[in-house]
Length: 280
Image (cartoon, rainbow, N blue to C red; front, side, top):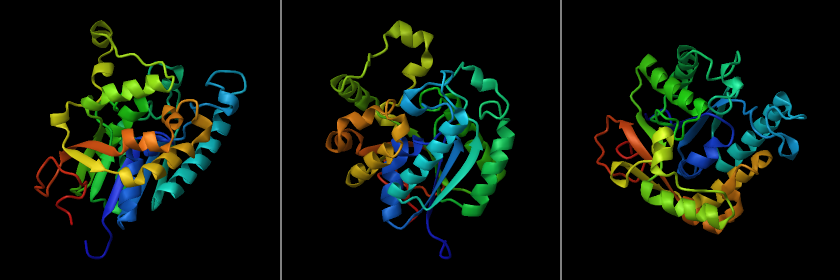
């Protein structure tokens, strides 16, 4: 370890995911001298086009959208001081059930083994001490998030590396506050009723009970930077509800990033407040 810096690798699905879920830790650890590696799996082509045009609408050009989103991703990485950005450049699969799920080249349509082999090469190159991605449900059921989880866990099996591995999550205690804030700022947010949750189990699987969260990282000091990283994804502003809050309220609600630790060889006690606990 003496001949290389401590390294964090975050594996995300789309441009802007890096800021939403891990913008705080990417900024914090970069400031602490940790090498930060962001792997973005898709090109974001199923995002909004100019003027808020949606996929399938007249005027929505997926290739042009992908080009814009790459520029925005690079700008976000500059804000967060990400050391290395790696792009797998699979086609964005869109939301679950969209026809784009099954298009050749889409991330969801790609065999897990293919994506895992490419990611394993990056892991061997960077030798991360910590790897962060999503849980089995992709946090909220998005196919590209689920696929990012799958290739990450498969890639780890292809290497002899033993990093600490974390999945992003949210404390259930925060979900009510989050819903209240969404309604306060004009979002159409309703808690799913039990019947709806039974029919759509992914809704009830968002986040974890507080006692199951292993890692609570205070990123309050970097709330403004995380906000600015999200704002860099200006083309998706209609979908990025958090930007309506302003930096102060955003930091108040989003100043702690939470994870569940799923692999560890350090023996660091949990709950912990540092992804690198036991490594330094």
